[in-house]
Length: 359
Image 1 (cartoon, rainbow, N blue to C red):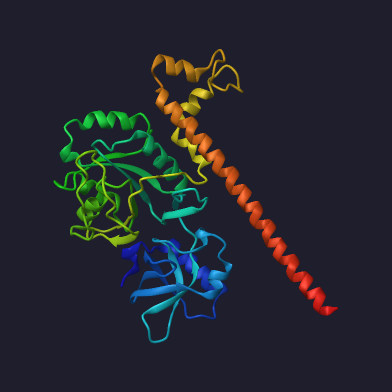
Image 2 (cartoon, rainbow, N blue to C red; image 1 turned 180 degrees about the horizontal axis):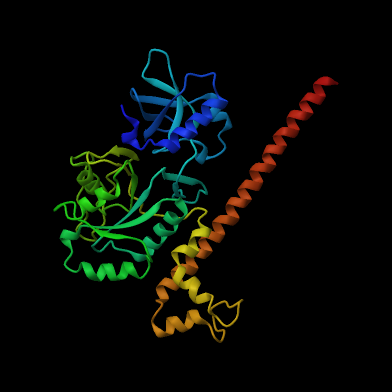
């Protein structure tokens, strides 16, 4: 099995060589995670696919979800004697990471995809089209380290593609936009060209936008099940239930992900400015540096809203996302402080036990 076909290159080789220098005692090899099963992983190696699990030491040192492997990771592992199974000892440093807050009230990070060159942000050209949702995806994509690319699906079912493109262009400054049809094949070749030379893309979007159909079109065969959308609201049902990395016949790789009805941001405050660069630029033109964009004289933001060059909905979305990110930052900081306090409580308990034994 040639790992170059799975994205292996000289940069990854240098990182692997550096790891082996500090860990020369084991018979180590490399693999890429194709599929995850609750801390058990299907990994592609030079001699085939293995089922692999993290070592005890690996799990002991892991502090958060980011410390465990995810689909797309390159992992350092050791083969179990006589078996097509491996023990994972380390993860090579990631080139990109796309994540979100887990759905619900729990404040934890969910890893969506790692080590991808492009993030295909998919949205269908029907009633499920939503600019506000796309703004959220863009913020997370800017923060991931990968190149965001907007893919508008179901072109064959849309009679007025240009109106949707005009709307997208108001929020995606400099981000490439592609319109595709998995049914007719239109636009598929353009996406293939983006994945030449072993590039990896992650396919992200809500249920019903046609991600599974697009995966099948890119793979040239039906690798994913497809369900029909509901006729009453054009919304889809969950088809993909797990994340999986596919090798494409024309070169390149694709990570398909489950549909996300809810997309809450996670630690993306720095990317808010990139996604809303138009509002940030206007804010810098206000008469007062501490302008709150309410009723201050010389407020460039509100002048733009009144003139119609900035939509009120987009500005409201900016404020909402800013509040959401500030709240998440406060909660995660509080959780980190609580974890640190608990850590030192355990250390003190152990110290007291040792002192008691000596007495």
